[in-house]
Image (cartoon, rainbow, N blue to C red; front, top):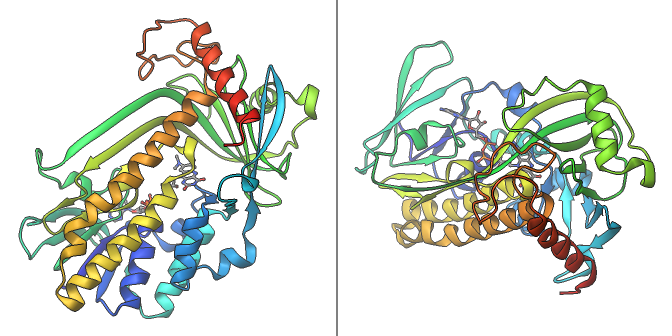
Length: 395
Ligand code: RFL
């Protein structure tokens, strides 16, 4: 089978790309390994930046988030020095986030894509991208019934995440990989509990970081820093809530609303960027192009931004025979990716102690700046100074 653009993966990147290509009249197909019900219920991101909302609005993809998203612009920091609220919506350009669970965004994007005639092959796993260095690449697949298949195309868009077929198919030596393990691990939780405050909560504690992020009026995401190598199910719910309450200083500021923990995942905070984001006829977008640690809440936002840039470039080439956008794609996206990496790196340093703190970081990788083992008073003082500057500096 053949089409102009084979898109691998029906996440935010692949589905924004599919919709925009469809809008521009470019023939495409989205191949998705999972079943439809799975991608529509997979809870991940929740915070969409103002620019992401503008992109989605520009292309008629923002109706659901306009109706059901919640505006958000305040963070609350809690530490041994007290607590304060940072209303970033009243600073800088006055931009706010929209809280809208990723699975709802994915459902909106998918519904819209199918409604305008888009094709998604669910249960179809891309195995490899072949002949990417020619103008007739193809994708070998395992079909839903287990049989092998193949899609031919003019271009392949790898939007299949960090462990997808696009990345695996890059010949060694063609693309440079930048990787950083920040040496910090989070236990990410979704709780069937209403939010405990009307802000994103960041708790800096000698036992480790804890975070609170509203998702809906009934669901809250929490993060609790844990030792590297922790198994997701090794903490009891009692231990999770006790530890969250302690680190969020519930005794001083009010206890958290507890509820059933309905999803848990251990996340090692890592960064990963490929350079360039192209190999011949194969282009990378979203997590396939670069992984940002969730400390920055940037991944889904970058995915949408890159998908718009790639869609324009592909359509210009395929409809108008103008390849300038494709040639510039990687150079246009990389500054955004590195900016997000810089922000995520800064957030990690803001929210976590130095190596070997009581939270049991267990690894000093990524902290190779002179301190060895043990909570470092130097890092703790830096962190306090950073937090204090957030409290006092208007800029
Ligand atoms: P996705 O969403 O992973 O989608 C990739 C799709 O590809 C499919 N796939 C394949 N299909 C066919 N063949 C193969 N061989 C395939 N291999 C994989 C998968 O089934 C999937 O459907 O990637 P995409 O589109 O690049 O989107 C990236 C975002 O999902 C990701 O960056 C964010 O979720 C990151 N992130 C956050 N980002 C934000 O912007 N704001 C947040 O608040 C935020 N919170 C988070 C997050 C990520 C988290 N995790 C996963 C660590 C919170 C968490 C806990």
